[in-house]
Amino acid sequence: MLWRGLHPQRLDLERESPRRPRPFLIERMTVLEVLHSTTAYFKKRKIDNPRLNAEHLLAHVLDRRRIELYLEFERALGENELATLRELVRRRGQGEPLQHLLGTVEFCGRIFLCDKRALVPRPETEELVELLSSKFQVPSSKSRIIDVGTGSGVIALSLAAKFREAEIHASDISDDALALARENAIRLNLGDRVQFLRSNLLEAVNGTFDLIVANLPYIAAQDRHTLSREVLHDPEVALFASEHGAELVRKLIEQAAARLRPGGMLALEIGVGQSEAFLSILAAKNYRDICSENDYSGRTRFLFGRYG
Image (tube, rainbow, N blue to C red; front, side, top):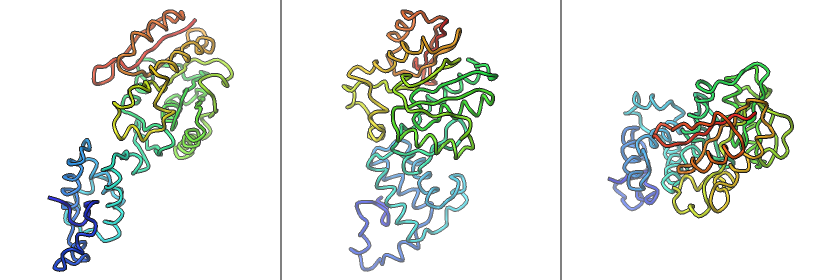
């Protein structure tokens, strides 16, 4: 059943039926009705997790926590609330990422600003931070860490919160991404903990580090057609790395060897099916203690190696 008052393609439906004036329809639409109708619409638009998306958008419009919606199922929505929600639902139905519509994303228990200036952080990247925070411990005292290709800054800022005494750096080639990362640093009261720098990989970076971590673009340009509508809203510079997808990671492996302190670690997030090639490159460049880790779906996603 179509949502009479919200369906993006039927915004003027009320005008077609004089027996159902617009104000009456809007006043009678409840939170539960809106959730059911939005979920049905998202299902037709092939949106993953349609009910969850509907709840997030409605909670955003009503300025509620998502769980609070369940206590207000009978609440009627006003015209302004519905108008705002209609537009968000329309954009989500066209494939715009939920995180862009909300303006934020949760990452490792913290809320980060999120928009089209940088890649939407993925759950796999949270796993990388968790690995670095536990199994692959980095000495917190007097250590130097750099996040290469920082994007919105989620890795660097999460590590800054974890390793309070470490000196944290973050680089990116995109001025827009760096601006977003700095906004996140201020938002999280970590503005004095991370030094941001515009750099193509490590080219403009000075000094050596105990940890170099990176989630660089690793998608081949020829694989563009395999990406979802949502992913294609991310900046191209954050997605694609040459025709075959391996160039940037390969270059960082080469550059990092000269920028790691003795025994320092290089930690990488990579694409599915790329591990064998990159493990071979790490070995050829004389890294040691090389290992890989799977993500929660069982795919090899993370590589680690020490140098010197």
